[in-house]
Length: 565
Image (cartoon, rainbow, N blue to C red; front, side, top):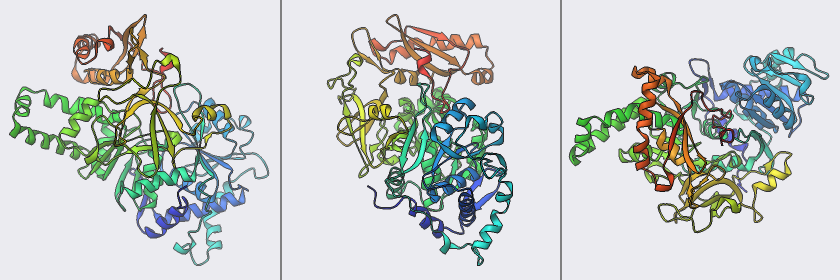
């Protein structure tokens, strides 16, 4: 158990950085830590007036904003349980989650609420617009909360007639062992499970990051990943708010143009991203450069190679705003070719690994120590990992299966401070999550070296078997396909004993290149031979199949692979 109480981190951080900027909406309002604290205090009064009890659930669903963050912080510092729900969930699925969580309060954007019904949420007492705080619906004794919400500044002034100050920042210290966050997965199986995250799980994540100085006090940070995901939430909100970091919430779809403008304007010191962003930069901005005959010649000359690498590295850093000292990639595996190149030119990249059930961190390492192909080192002092043979005999994975480094491949299993309690009101799935001796089954296949660096091969459920029983990891092949010109996304599957790839073309890239979709498809097909040259005999793709519609995805934007198997 982590000795530091999770909630105490915010009391200390808020007081220390009282006058510093805390949260901003991109091209909008900025709140100092003092203003965030005052708003939290107002929400605490609101929670008291509506009778919210410690441990009750509060659902938060809507667009990422500074106000979203404030409600999140107000809920956990009050002693209630926060239930963040991705705004991309279908209304029916969202209502199912809200009802399953037994939430009594719901903060939601009004446009999302228009597609819901209070009749299907019998346990919800009050619904408020999370941005304007307008009362959207109520059932019970208090039918309209608008008057109460409007009076919160006055009620705070009455409670603290001398003004709300540093000395008044005192929160309920929910014991680290208790539930604090209920995070519903957006998995590819079509069923969302409520992950029970404790204060200890969150404290383990935050304390590890603080110990390793992943963020520095009062740095600038741009949040463009969904805050309802534990990955983004942990770094951009939970960690950042303990050490005085100024976080700007993009709050819009991070298209290349929008994201590029925001990065140059805000100049963040750390960039937290998913692999796709860097892979597209590599494909669209770097490959065309290094494939030029002149540049190829320069790269073949040891003296000139360093100059080319330095210029490309600086160009990338300038594109991120010019002040970035570290890029942390997580949420999925990074394309090996991209990783090799970025490491070669000295770009400050590292890859981490985690899952919602670990809130989320399992492994991380600073950029200088990152090993290509790995997703970091198991969190020293906080987590442990082991590689175990899959128990499903049909998977044909045994302890003797090894990767190219000669390391045993199996299921990654973990234990430690960050491991959740299990799934809310789901004893069967909770039991399946853990081994008999208490290790969490990640469901990911991988290997681990002597220094506890993890290497991910793919999900155990997606692994395919070759004709002679060889293990084929489709994600690794798909990563190579993604670098073929005009490819948007792909799925590798087995049909009648042959490997095939379903490919969705990148229409934007095709239009920018001024070619027809038919011409682009011919280019894609022509690359199959080159692709197969990079693969083992049992991994070769026999056929490319054109798919004009994007694959159906979860709210997390993971492909629902089971629909195409």
